[in-house]
Length: 234
Length: 363
Image 1 (spheres, each protein chain N blue to C red):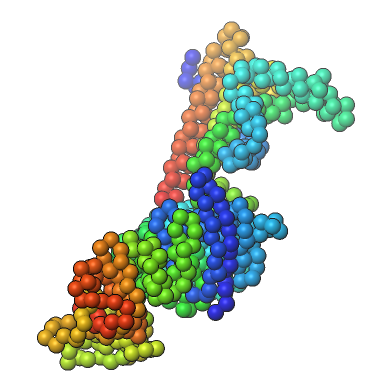
Image 2 (cartoon, rainbow over the protein chains, first blue to last red):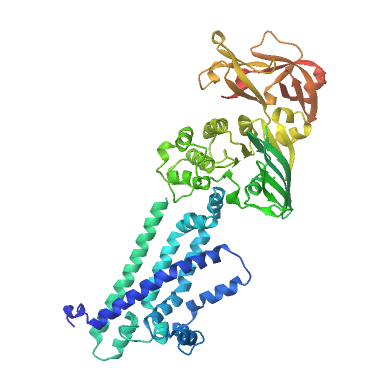
């Protein structure tokens, strides 16, 4: 295969790349506020049944992604208990659509992000929060001006993890969102599809290169941000 | 003086019981007690960082905790400034952001920002991060931050422990100045008695989670029980005197009490600032640095020979503590043997002898 061929992308391939970035970005934006809230809650609050809740939240980390996708399908699919409600009331069909790809990415990345945020909140010295309270700050103000800024490295690395994990998501997406070109066919799905067709090796390679570059950029970005934050703090 | 802080609280923690009741007046009150006897727990309970099991706390007549009425105002509503032992400046904010963090609480603070920054000598630090400041600077910033938050009372936990001896001596005048200037009551915890005494005469003694005494130090030393509590910390006599006259030919300064005839001579060199007549000076001397004689002695280098009458004598571990009324009450530590040889007893007229150099002065 020629070098020019390696960098000449077909429109279907560009669609897949664009779609992947869209899914990853949306997933990151939606997941962050929820994960910050839950991560903080798990780090700071003690309540009955906490370990069970933690277990459930962490399940997607250990379950095969296909299983996660199947569970999503039987819940949110047109015949699922929640999906059928959406469909009959508002005519919304979630499964096998672009939102389904985003939901699959969110569910799979969620434990990673929550864990990262939770650990960094746990590392924030509670004494600073007490000091802020003696200065008259409400719980909300303490959270936004002390806890969150001090836990920022964890939040950022959580966001990068969500982004990277969404880019690589395959199993849950294919079983819950399907493999529809231009709608749910993300980069990994496109790579898988082109692998199935003989003679598509160059196309596969092009997508693989993009996949590697995107993942690399995400990691370098995370490292850069983390360093800047640490420098700012000192 | 009106009481600014009143409390009566009980708090069980494992096998420790804090059971304290007191009325704190305006001005500076020192809280002395050995480590682990409940000083910090008491401050935390007053600030609202820990909840007592029972009792009440009121600040300027405003009840912030009452277990019977189920009142428990949250920390942020109590308007109590707290200067922590470990300082706790926010590391991600600049000095000016730290200082102004609490200002929002009450809108216009009665304390002028520029003026306070001037008094604390931290103007050049405003745009630095706390990490770039020295220990003494951080300490001053944290005091400023607490004052600017509109606090009705300032709690300070071991404000001298994070800084070295030299810095200590610079922080003490700041605290005195702040107290005079802003009239803000302060509760200062320390396990170092001389540090506390250089700051205030009014002491609260805490032992095993209970308050054993509260009052003027000069009154507290008349009670054997209090001497027992304070002895490990190094006892001091404290006199509030003012400059009466300068004696340049002798290289001495005469200090005199404003309420009685008590007077001492100190070396001119001991003064760090300009000697002004009428200036208030706090003078500290250790009981073991004072000798007792039955007669004045002429052929001796000692400048200070003060006549008085023995009010009380307590004996402890082979030592005798004599409380001598010389106008001011002076505590003198001598050996049991000396006491016997000199036939000292209550009512005996004696002379207290000490070198000028044994006096510690705080201007």
